[in-house]
Length: 130
Image 1 (tube, rainbow, N blue to C red):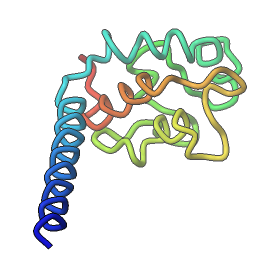
Image 2 (tube, rainbow, N blue to C red):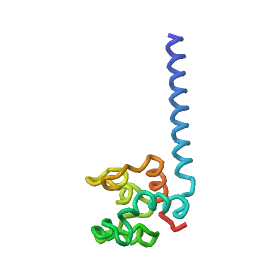
Image 3 (cartoon, rainbow, N blue to C red):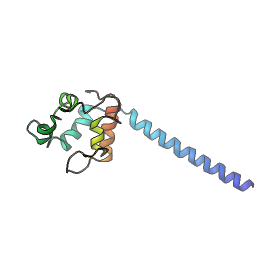
Image 4 (cartoon, rainbow, N blue to C red):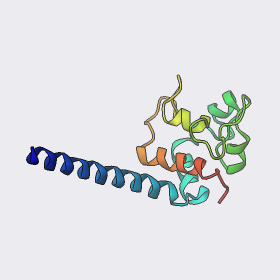
C-alpha cells in the first residue's frame, strides 16, 4: 500500500505543477499590454484591408472600415464589432476565431493562433487606441 500512496502523491504533484504552469502562461499572455498601433493595426492591415478599406467589398457590404481605430470602433451598419473588455462577445473575435457561420478573413487564409490571441487580449484589455 505504501508504494501506491507514494505514486498517487507523485501524480498529484505533477498535476499541480502542470496546472500552475498553464495558469502562469495564461496570466502572462493576458497581462502583457497590447498596443493597437504596434500589435493590432499591423494584423488588420495585413489580413483585412484587402476587403475592409474605403473602396473594398467588405466596406460596401457591411460598412466596416478597418483602415484606422475610429473605423474599427464605429463598427458596421449592423452594429458594433468590438465590445471593449469582452472578447467572448465581440464580433471581431467571434468572426476571426471561426465561432460564427462566417469566418473572417472571408475565403482567405485564417489568422494564426498568435494573431487571434493578440486581438483577444487587446479587446479584453479594453480595446484602447494606444
